[in-house]
Amino acid sequence: MPRYEIVLSRFAESDLKEIVAYYSERDPKYAGRLFVKIRDKINGLNCFPERGAIVPELEKQGLLKYRQLIDGFYRIIYTVKGKVIRILIIIDSRRNLEEILMDKLMGMSEDE
Image: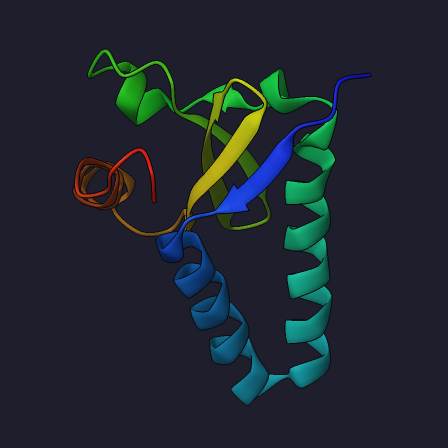
């Protein structure tokens, strides 16, 4: 099975830290479990990067290179280029997704 390198963008790292910090104040054990769950979901892409669906809000805009994994309320948005999986953002799906996705994804470079 092919193995891919997984790289978190600075936005994804920041998103994950914010999510964990938010829940750490309320329930530290839950925050820890949520971190592990999201991390494991991301690491599962190592062998099957194409398993995530194309992000529907971006597909409507003709942007087909962005994929997503859903874990509870969170969407993990990523791209696959060669043998590199770039985790771009991790967002709460209860927010205005289209606006957040367009702002964040259009504001980042391919090399972040």
